[in-house]
Length: 125
Image (cartoon, rainbow, N blue to C red; front, top):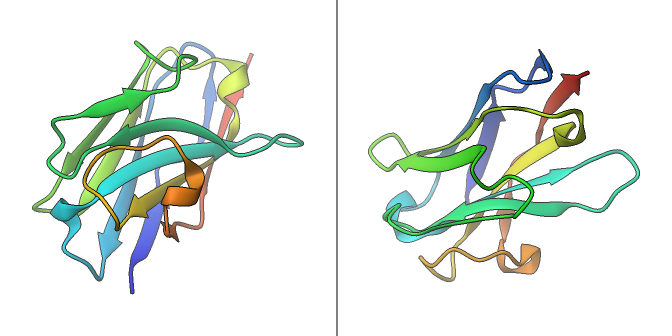
């Protein structure tokens, strides 16, 4: 069984930065791809970013590319999402997820078996 716990969500002004963290337990963390997804009110959950088990491969949604950076510290079993130049449209609940079937990053939500409880990010204009 895997447990994922996100933290770092907050209220921030447009143009500001936040770093989200997701601590994992229960599996050999470094073997598996990790992803960040988000869900805004009234919208479907969407892909944000993903990283490979070793952290050498990353993938980003076009809407966050060049503003967000996903990284991981396998020694701490933690994945991070550094979010810069935040916009009001980035307001959402952010979820981390683990794909135990592969170490390759994937954008498809149904590939991820384990999910955290989410952390709220609110960007004011």
